[in-house]
Amino acid sequence: MSTKVEEVTSKAAVRTEPARILVADDQADVREALRLLLKAEGFALEIVSNPGAALEAVQTNEFDVVLMDLNYQRDTTSGREGMDLLSRIQAADSKLPIVVMTAWGSFELAVEAIRRGARDFIQKPWDNPRLLTIIRTQVDLYRAQRRAERLEAENSLLRAQNRPVFIAESKAMQPLLTLISRIGPSDANVLITGEHGTGKEVVAQTLHALSPRSGRPMVAVNTGGLAEGTFESELFGHVKGAFTDARADRVGRFELADRGTLFLDEIANVPIKQQAKLLRVLEMGEMERVGSSKTHKVDVRVISATNADLKVESAEGRFRPDLLFRLNTVELAIPPLRERREDIPLLAAHFLKEYAERYRKPVKGFEPSAMQKMLEHPWPGNVRELDHAIERSVLMSTAEQIHHSDLGLEIERASSAKIEEMSLEEVECLLIKKALTRHSGNISHAAEALGLSRSALYRRMQKYGL
Ligand SMILES: Nc1ncnc2c1ncn2[C@@H]1O[C@H](COP(=O)(O)OP(=O)(O)OP(=O)(O)O)[C@@H](O)[C@H]1O
Ligand SMILES: [Mg+2]
Image (cartoon, rainbow, N blue to C red):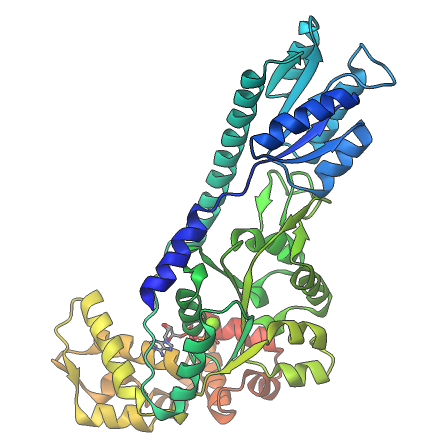
């Protein structure tokens, strides 16, 4: 199967869309000549006859280059209408290359256009090979620039991403494994549910790795962690000047994930107002950057995750049912660790090896009493809690075998006796752990018991690494 996936990926990687050119000229014979010439060279064209239509075209569609006349009907020689159009196109999209056409002999007009930001000019009647060379050069430059912009944004997001290790040998995990292998390679939107720390992100990475999109990035967004005002700009990007702090164009996560996978984490925490915006993009497959009316088509597979029960959220009016319907084409529920205890020894061994290497400690295994402790512990924080317990034990250990006291699993009982000696933060952390244990890791219930909102509890859990 892996060869098949690779084949599809490499095809996707070499696929290049034909360059899109907007041609604007008021003379029918010029338009026709350009249409014949450029079509034959394999360009995709949109041809318009006046400045208004040209402007509308750049505002609604994407182009790689604009080829525009400077003289239009109302005023056929001064080039003022053309100059005005040039400025307006630049205002709409500052990076789009513009090549102007001028009448033979109006060299000064061409110079003026270049001074105002046109990338090149052609004098009419033009020389076909020269016109084609100019257009190809501009297309290449533009695409290279966009690629660089994208790569930079991608790199900063994905630097730390490795192929996931996904351990699941227990019986309780088998139906999930079957589903993952069946739907991984598809384009279906998947909603992953499960308690805190059960491995939702690992499952998302696994689905992406199994898909033909694996040659492209999986872009993760913690939708629950975005500040009120930044949601749209993070997801959809913005153009320079869209709001006070928008000093440069910014590529949003949706665009970054184009032809790849978008992972919307903590989806239940998206405020209802933003849910409408998300729904629109998922329904239309297209979006606009904040401050721009230009529509971008995006081809993304959406994987989302939550530890809330979205059906309850939806019944209680906090989550749009139509959005839920878009997201959960397939739903994967990950069982909590306490329902698959057979996986504990394998997971523990995996983490032990990792941390022993990282911290250069000669630890090789667990004493039977330590294993017993791990098998009995309720793990309200699931695999992440196990991961942290083992990291801690490797750091604490002074022998080849982890002793049960190294795991720190009794700390809660011991320390609650001397609450007077604890710092406020330690007490807070302890109470949160207790509430989570009492409510079997259900964040909504634990939050209610603690008198906190879901997101407030979530923030604290992140702070304490729970
Ligand atoms: N089946 C597994 N095999 C190996 N490692 C796992 C597995 N499940 C979880 N982990 C590890 O446990 C940690 C928590 O997993 P992950 O972040 O995917 O959980 P989550 O469900 O997304 O948690 P949260 O609800 O807090 O976002 C990670 O370090 C992950 O690598
Ligand atoms: Mg997660």
